[in-house]
Length: 382
Image (cartoon, rainbow, N blue to C red; front, side):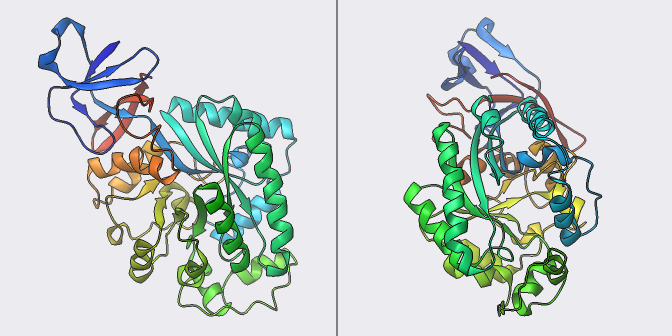
């Protein structure tokens, strides 16, 4: 048993009173939080910094790790998407796997214990099965034409089955409302409800998404033209992207809305009435669109944080993402640390295992410091 005391102890939801000591078994299982007066001083390890539970990366694309520095930044979402499509299969699988392995290792070394990962294939399954990190995989489906919904869903179910055969947690996810039909989004929701698993969708990452779903104008027409995908049959009419597809979200499925860069106040209030969770990926927003969400409009106590991929970011470090968000001044340290611990665990429906210092849990234990208004990762203790 180890007894750990730092300058501050954050339990996953709040900073605990001064003098709090974390009691941890050698296998990382939390025994209790005690007051230092209940222990002999010689038994307590004194640490400089802040003790926190292990971190949660709520949104990642491990499969795109080999695209680091391959796609130029600041091009906008349409050209970024075209860049991913053009380059993602340029390297052999062995090199893709090696890049994924390195990314998994980097996340572990950055204190991450739980990841919500977007996958289009089963290529990452062996890495996830052997990782020290727990992954929930969102098998991403794409199909704007509703006549393809059955075939797309059937293919997704095969990929899900492969993850489940490796004893990996997985559910389905529509890519985005501009690339997934309402029928397919609805069917995915029904599938995830049966699994009692979360969902995820890229939401309002670019203004072009809103204009495309309002009146079919803007840059996404160029995307489909370049890919030679006919969309002459598609005639959406909606105030915003979220208002277009929110009506088909399954009410029993917790839906992670990712990015939200161009979400307005009306959209946010609507999302708060539904079974949704807001996930920010600020590093990727700056990399692709050079714009951040209007953080001040969102609930400061319930958001979570992701890194997106190495195709759209320079690192997979949620603490670095949190630092970007905290620079805006809209959130407290406590709210920010909650975003990368308990809020992330709740979004991925893994709160019984991760996110908080509670008896019998093994959430990981990290030591961080704050210097010059920036959090810095020191080391993981468990």
